[in-house]
Length: 126
Image (tube, rainbow, N blue to C red):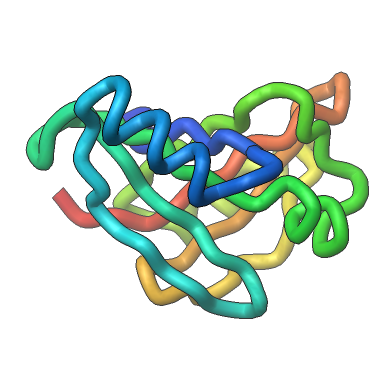
């Protein structure tokens, strides 16, 4: 099952200004700046070895790709070591799940709670 809260996904209007805020004003470190599938995401954290990070996503791009997502609040990214098993477990428990997608950082899928709040799960080994 889920074994760790890995990331908080924050949807912002201007990723570069958001990076400047988190790094210059709060002293966070940029852990990654990636682009794939027409989306750019920037991972920042208080330190390289922090257990949880913030991923800055472009609000407009995410809205175009996933119009049903609530972009007004951050999303949670959970980690699992067995994504296919978790996917099957959630699906068989009548939980709404999206497709498993292969990203540069690993396999990921979304799932929704009963109020249609969406969360993400990424496969990460220990």
